[in-house]
Image 1: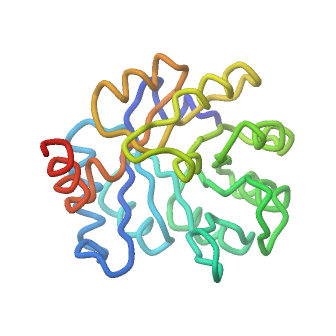
Image 2 (image 1 turned 60 degrees about the vertical axis):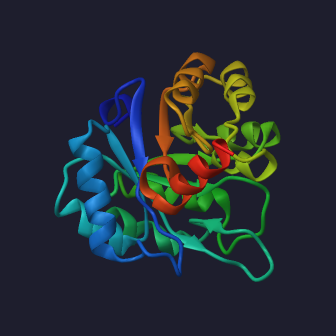
Image 3 (image 1 turned 30 degrees about the vertical axis):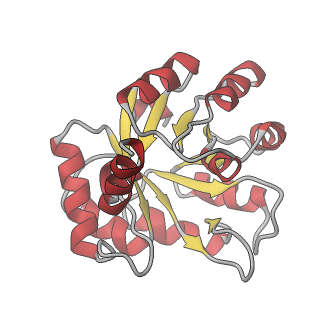
Length: 219
């Protein structure tokens, strides 16, 4: 199986996730977001947790990129850092598993995680933070790269178009762009930079962030 078998080029993927202590953090809302994304023409979904994957899979046939987030003490969120998290995600119905491919400490080695993803018949998506992570991701034999984590180093509402271009120069893997995509022009620029597909999250599925964006942009 290849990415093109699941996600069409220039496709829009919607991230349907909710942070703890937010109004949308319940399963039925995640399912509603996913069904709404499918109604609107999305070609895929990005979800957090096996529980949400299973609930959404029961209501939609869209391909699912799945992750399992944990919060190490004193650190930023870690995405699918333990090999034990892989099988529950694929068993729940995910076809693609994303994981943090940076040098951060994690319970399992990166290669062990990628191998487990492939053994489950899923595709491995490397979430990276900078150009320093590209060579490592390629060496792991992943199926695609996403510059998801570069938003930690960028101004709010600014996608990392430069990192997309760098990934495309340095390897042949498809790029699934994600992070700070707020407007159709952002998405078009992502595709022009070389993105295979673009993930949109907060601009669609976090109403308080959408409100905040309009408030800030119209002051």
